Length: 212
Image 1: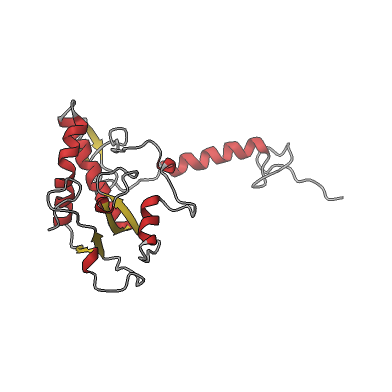
Image 2: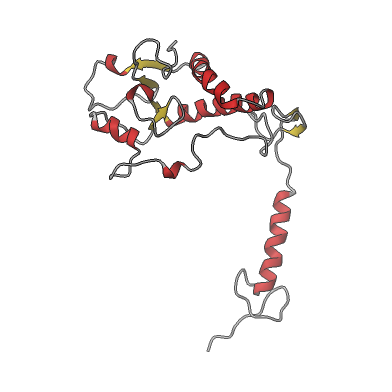
């Protein structure tokens, strides 16, 4: 019969993990965690939080707010509750696929008005996941600033500013914006991830930001 080995720390109880008993493993893991968090981590100086104005340690090059102050603007509480097709796609993505366009995993559908239940073509952008994340980071920063400056009527102010801010983001990027009707290719051909494809609606629509 194989003899059970004793814990290398207490030398009393039988070892179960890392050659240690259950109690000594807990102590060992706590020490490892404390040692890890004592390591010097790269910092980017002390800045003033854009939202609360208090001094904070800048942990990332692009950080402008405390984690507690960074409240994202969301039109729904849980994106998993968004309506989906029988194939598991969001209705917006399924609509584009049904039109015959080929979307790989790197391409997503952006809702201009931030409402994923407003599934009309003029409210869609076909955009790469990378650019989509960049756009939302920009909008989240502006939303945080608006919260700081305006404590009342936030939603109405945001709704009137969103399209202008989206246009501003477009102007600061090198991404090319193309009307989906002007791509000059078969819908079955893969779309270029470096471009943003838009469904321009009638002039004067409130749902389509100005394309630079």
